[in-house]
Image (tube, rainbow, N blue to C red; front, side):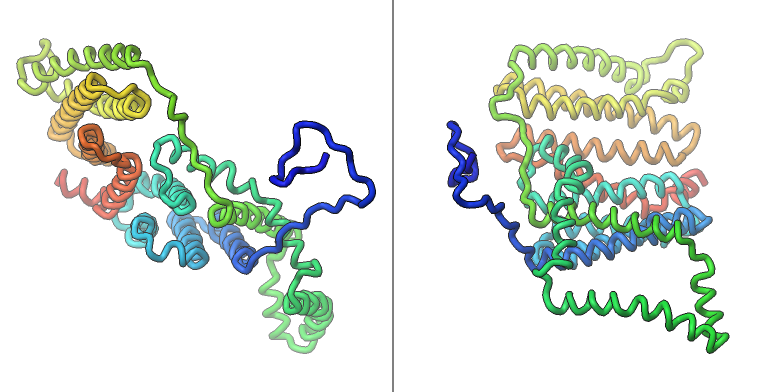
Length: 434
């Protein structure tokens, strides 16, 4: 069947014209920027093999592994800004994200031996690539991702779709180096490599025989050379190059299709009222207990001290607060708009704030009795962040502006995490307990 003018196909079959042979449409030649992308990803892949992958087997100390991990992502970030400079040079929000990533990497250099918190270092090693993925997705989307579902799906697509969907473009760009479309300079360079390699294979052994010092130098360079390991590294670099090429090509030239739920997707108002009302009733009962026994100190069951009462519960309370914020976001996005829904959501935020205060009070009592540790400091730090997000949600609910709470909250969380690291958690814990 012949394609129509718009690239689709007609509803009824059409006779095939056999008078002329069918010639498939030629692929558009790569632009200059796309050609530069190939050596860029080759450099990134080489650094990946040397720093990120090779450091695991090359370095014995964990500090050097984390350091190599951070240096690789700094190199990736530098390559990204060099390649997309025109797009990124005036984007102050992405510059803030990049500065936070740099601060996380530098933290590993600034605290190599003094008060090192390995827990923070491990979390940082996971946070850095996750943040850089969000950085790339935000750059590609041009801030069109205003919905929570759009940001989440696009972030996941950055890991599982973008590195694979344009692998054909990578192989096509490789093929152009050997095709007639190659520039004369590229052809001459490739011809020079083909001629130089066999000549060096003859000349180098002769020079080694002519001078013992030169021979010793060459042998020291290739003393640990392994054909199998060399082939593995070449394959690894090729695979990583292809994945980074597809990813960066999608980010730069592939466009970005946002994901959002259909506008007509709504939760019935009766369902919303029942769900939010029943949850709020349970929270009201919980808050009454908090006001009676925790805040007012009305007394505890016999044999129970307030330190024991607060020993457990603050982590669970914070978890419930986080779940409440998710429930708030779902019904704010999908619930049928109305004054009753707004009142129920405002009540949910109020009860969540009371529960957060309850968790903070428990944590304070526990720290006063048993001292401060890394996990307790992290819990307190996260409570302050959750309180900030509750405030943002209240502003979003009561104001007429469509405040991007998820984007702002994510940026605040990143900055808050960086501040925690530079606070030097172990030193702060030691100072507090001392």
